[in-house]
Length: 115
Image (cartoon, rainbow, N blue to C red):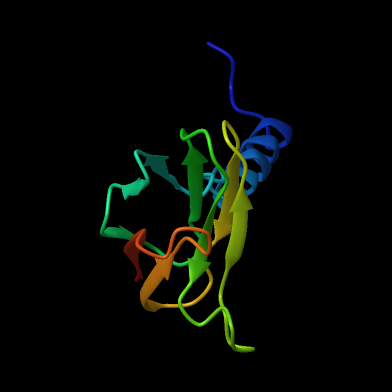
């Protein structure tokens, strides 16, 4: 059995210090998918956390939007257009409960809560 030399002990201490100081593996933010099909958002309501991504996927054959209710004001949080067969994403940055709708089909409504 070989003895632990000062050089080996020092190397072990440095390696341990690097492991302790290294940041944890970055976990990518969660992505929540909301489908648009049959002229409706699904699921609804949806709850996500600040920093998470919401993706709307348009499975209909017509254009849709996901327009936060205050889109007409300067305080609108998001307003995305989604062509048929396409998707759009928004990273949620503000806490609260938000109603949204489709600008082209105002009867399409849903709610998103950001914690």
